Image (spheres, rainbow, N blue to C red):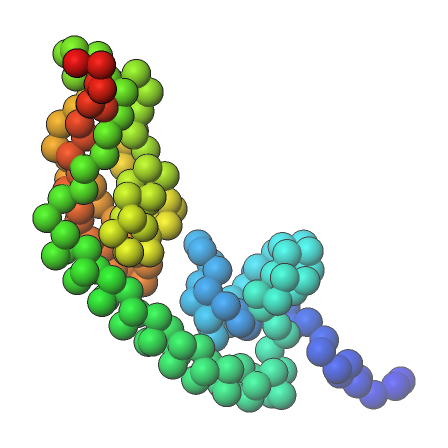
Length: 170
């Protein structure tokens, strides 16, 4: 009989029959970077490996991952510091005023959504993307407190005053 030889980058099977992979990036609902996870073979072969989200846990890959993890940690800390500064700047804004077309009772003809709030914050030189704004569409003129999820568990709140568009005819 021939001796067993281990192929290079051979996939290691987990205790449940799935493939063991090391995550090279955070994957929602799966794990954080650097964790060894067991996934179904199709998910690993068709999604994680081709997109560079995971790698086969060999000694060489683990060593490269440690170096990469240090760089990513430094970049993450810098990004978190920037987001923290952004959150403090947002807290200093007393409120945003957004004009929208409304009837006499204050009901809006359309709605004010995340895109309009993001655009108003950009107008104040605060770089907040529409995906960071957590809200339901606003349908009436009033003062609202809107939650912003900036990332890395950094949150902020901004007050938004929705007012009707001033008629120039009157």
